[in-house]
Image (cartoon, rainbow, N blue to C red; front, side, top):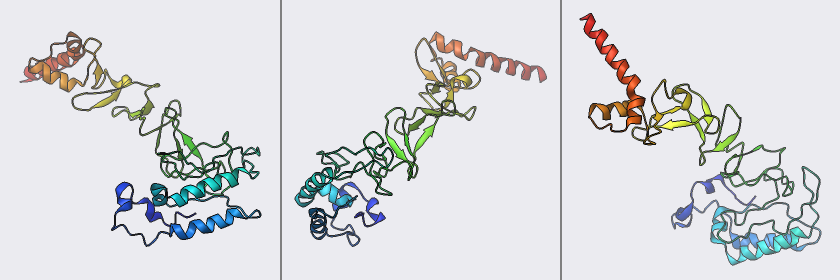
Length: 263
């Protein structure tokens, strides 16, 4: 593992190439690559797994590009068995060399924990957060049901629907929390409505009892408080919205009438 330090994950983008960035924890690329080359050049020696520092993968030096080509050639010539199914791992691309890919320079078909090999049928892909992959014995990978992105249990950033038990990532965000009944459900199991004005939210089951409802006439989502404000200002022109607000208006009129009677 040549990533050398957890500090390398603190900075990204332009900060990695700043003249003031502390490079004291990094390895010298022009010193390490020849050593790696000398290892794979020997017939009785092999590298199971190499993980390069992020800054090396960002720079894509000629020296590293040439090593990746040699590594792929040597690795594909050796017999590697999948740790999960015992089938031969058939691949000519162990190190990603796809131009402009965020995975450039990452080794695939390999568990980043035990360094055992994983075939294409068994691997779940790289974790979207730490950019590592693992075998089933080392780390559980969970897959988003919508975008099929993988996340390891260490970086797990997924929401689970309490009805269907499916996982979804934060980018897809179909699992919604209802502020009224305090339940987490995906949009397939239970639609949720958000007031497009104030942002209040509730599930469809709580829509009539609480706030936010969807109007079939104007196709707007508003809470009763926002509809009532428009009504009191004489700005609620939609008949559908007026119908949804009617129980609220009747309830407030009855409450006001009882209050006047008690005076």
